[in-house]
Structure formats: structure tokens, C-alpha cells
Amino acid sequence: MRLFLQQLKRLFIPQNKEPYLSLSQLLGFHPNDVKLYEQALTHRSSHFPDGKRPHNNERLEFLGDAILGATVADILYKHFPNKKEGFLTSVRSKIVQRETLNRIALEMGLDKMTVASIRPNSHNNCVYGNALEALIGAIYLDHGYRKCFKFVKERMIGHYLSLEKLARKEMNFKSNLLEWGQKEKLRIDFELTDIYSDKNKNPIFHTTVSVESHPLATGTGYTKKESQQTAAKKAIRRIRTDKNMQSLITELKRQSSLKPEGAPM
Image 1 (tube, rainbow, N blue to C red):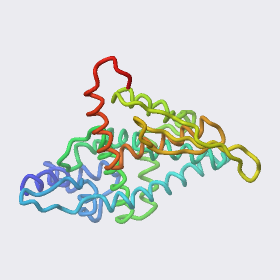
Image 2 (image 1 turned 180 degrees about the vertical axis):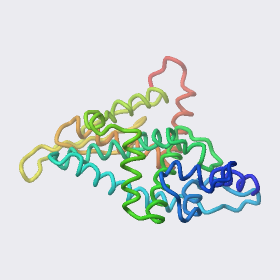
Image 3 (image 1 turned 180 degrees about the horizontal axis):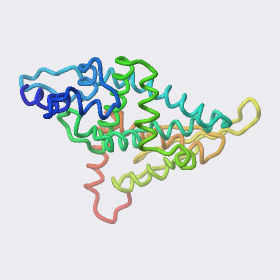
Image 4 (image 1 turned 90 degrees about the horizontal axis):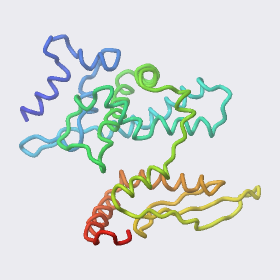
């Protein structure tokens, strides 16, 4: 318990004794309810030596995820006044995806502030991105939407992202998933399972992506490529968040390691 409290003390009461200096520098303003921010930066893996668990950041993460989505939509709507809904949705997805949030969280230094008893790995590498979302939830409860908007626009996007460059960047989820499968020595397959038409007679493609013949996710789109990208995006999210799928992948990797070298995947 003493070690846990010391970690929080180093964050919220720095050695120079100025109250909340570290957090205030990160946020750009002084917090009112410090306990909210303590909770936002406390991962669920944290626990006291006696086995008791402190309040963790999962509820604040839930709130922050929704606030971040609304705030980014607000910013993009005003920044790109002549762009269509599909464009805005695409850019928002690139900002709120886990890779982007994790990178921003690390560059902000949240890895040094977050209290956790686990080390991020390929299955739980969203610890710091989740903490960033929880931090946004804490800001909302402590100071309201306007402060959230300013924090996201100035502290996050203004410091760490270029909206113009991000808008031009194409997310290739299929390539990322295939690279992951190659790295983990697991076979990834994309199968076009259906083609049908919408009410305007436009063709809609339906794709299923699987790992070692186990279905991962499905996706639809107006082109085969779009359906594959949608399926790959869902599959990546499931690999990172679905504990049952993570257990299956662990078993598939174990089985793969037992295969003789040169045998087909």
C-alpha cells in the first residue's frame, strides 16, 4: 500500500512542493478534484499488498471514449467545412484508434504517470491509450466540455497530430493484419462470402477474415477491398480486446510452434 501511495504522491505532489505541478503542466490548467485524475491514471491491474484494489480507470475510460469521439467530431466538422460525412468519419477513426492514442499518451509521458502492475504487450498494449481516454473523462467531470475541447484540440491534436497529413493517410488494416499473422506464424485468410445489392442496386461485398480457419470478423463494403479493410479492422480490434480470442490465439501459436520447420502454416 505504501508503494502505491508513493507512486501517486510523486505524480500529484512533486518534490518542489508546488501543488499538482506535474498534472497541471500536462493538462494546461489546475485540477479541482485531484481524486478523479488519480483514478484516471490507475489501471485495473493495480492493487495493494493486502489484495485490495483501488478504484480503477475503466468507468472514466468509458466516459472519456464517448467524450473524445464527440470532441474530435466537433473539431473536424469546423476544421473541414466542405468535407462529406464519410471523409470526417475516416479522419476521426484515425485519431481515436488505439495506435494513435497510445502514441500520443507515450509522447505525453502518461507511461510514467499511470499506475499499473502489468507491462503492456501485444495483447494489452492499449493501457496508456485507455488512460488517456480516462483522463479526458476526468477532465469532463472536473471542468466540463469546453475544457475537454480545448485539451483535445490544443494539447492532443495541436501538439502531436497534423489533421491535413492525417486526412491524406490511408489506413491499411488488411496489410497490418497480414503482417501480424506473418510475425506470429499464423495463417490469415480473407474470403468473399457474399455479394448482394442495396436498395439502389449497388453491389455490396461481404468478406470473412479468419486465423488458422477460425473466423475472426466479417466486413461489408461497396468494393471487395473496402469489405476486406472493414473485416480486418474489426479483426484487429477483436484480437486486442476479446479475451476468448486472445486465449484461442495463444493456443494456435502453441500449436504452430510444434509444427516441423518447412511445414505449411
